[in-house]
Length: 254
Length: 65
Image 1: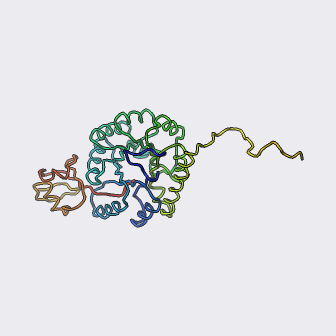
Image 2 (image 1 turned 60 degrees about the vertical axis):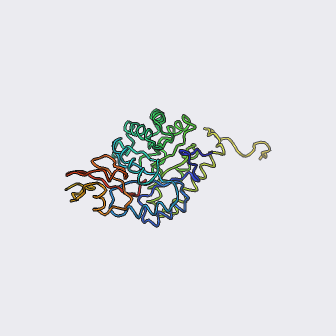
């Protein structure tokens, strides 16, 4: 069963970013071909490209999740969110308050402050957070109804860096929709996120920077489908010692 | 008056933000505006007066992750 995101049930657990593709045509083909259910976008100084990009995004016909990428303070993120709401006509906001340039890891204090302020102002906040369970609880208290824990630092392609932390987080808040956002490099990482019980994955670089982004997007779409099926099928528990799968009884005396 | 638009010095007549956007060629563009770091909703651009040295940000949809 897929949890919904602020009342929106998604057709696919695959959310894709729209940056760094070789061309707008490849971006469009990748997103359509993979059946991505949500696309992320940003706001930047208008330099002549924005209006054409808007037409492409609007034409995809899927929910738009604007981000506050590059914001290093709650104030900057809040202002960006307000501007994004007007431009993209959505209350959804992928809230990024970045704490460090090398790791692009969230600033938990700024993130909490901005979540509280935006939720009170009617935004539907998707906070980009770590696997920290205490922070997660505080974000939910502040009004977030979705969490987006990282897999690994943005753009790193390292996969799920802290499986223990992510598993603990999933178990701690069983009713909260959660998206693994950032750090995925391969479809197997996405499948693993789904196997752990997460509701969706959001990635960008792994698809956009692949040699063939359209094929890679499709590979991720199949992987999340496999992972979700596996989760629903109740996987076996791992064990340390071998146990023969072929029956021992009836074995020949040779 | 001289104001800063997206980081560059520009000469505009104004006097309102709405008028300045028209001068800059963004009348019908899908953009959001912030003046001196604070969001200015579309609906209040006509009543927002500019002054010398103001810092205007005009943001548009862009690719993002």
